[in-house]
Length: 408
Image: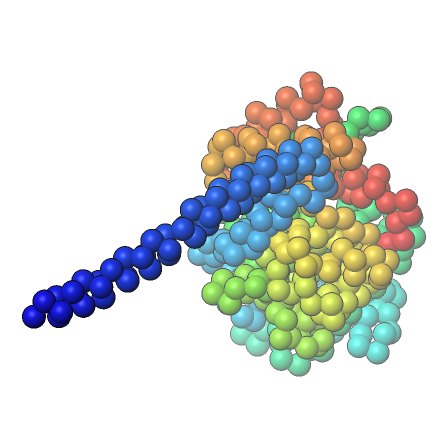
């Protein structure tokens, strides 16, 4: 009995020694952890100092805003776009070219590259054949079906003669004040046209600013005319596929799955929705603008129509700007997103960031949206920046300043 008790005590003693040995490494581990934590803190502090000191043209914060904005769809119910086939409301006269066909943005050519800019009995100055006007069997009136909408029209490329101020990006450019050597800022308000009351408030902002209209909004030409009359510049906000399949970029958006003919068809539908714009910037498009092959098709059309391209940079992998350069398309990229967060304090921070970018590189392009907080902030901010030594200009003015030679 006594031997068994002694044996039991010896067996219990062994684990206790083992436990003591295991406890020792914990102290070493804690020391290493504290050392690593201290190193991380120092590294983080240095990184923060470097980040603050290097205010670059395309900063990481703005890129994050772009990606977030790319995943947010506007309220399409505000637009209530017409049902197919979409007929142009300004094409209503039965026997003569409708108002608006004279001097439209770009000139049509067919798939074989034949220009249709000749003036004849069957052709308007904008290049659209008057034979394309189809008669409504019920009313007897003639309207024009846009390319790709009738089911029989072939998508057409367009071409513009790049002579002096005849190309649209020059022809429809808003007047810019003489800034001299002062840094300049361009404010672009896109997603315009859907919410007509807020778009109208945007038009009342002191300018010149650049307003970019979604092609599927209603009453586009009257809205655009009002903006241009107020001295603002106008662009077309072209919807393109975002990276998230759950987000709807809207009707007629360019998708990465489209072939050449489908892209041409949809682009012509959008580009013929209204007139008087200087170029295009992408709505969403983080997926589509990263597709080199399809962006080449886009730039073919931009070049042929004499339009400029503003890369909204909703993705760090966008090839929009670089592809435009390869095709000789006048192009520029945005610097700051003003209102990714619909928050007054953050909007103020982004406007301050816009000033810092402009002070550093001589110009800045900031994109915002027709929202109450944004409009209110701009109403106050625009008159103030002049006193701080900045000049508000349209996008085309910055394009001319930033390009040594614009070939478009």
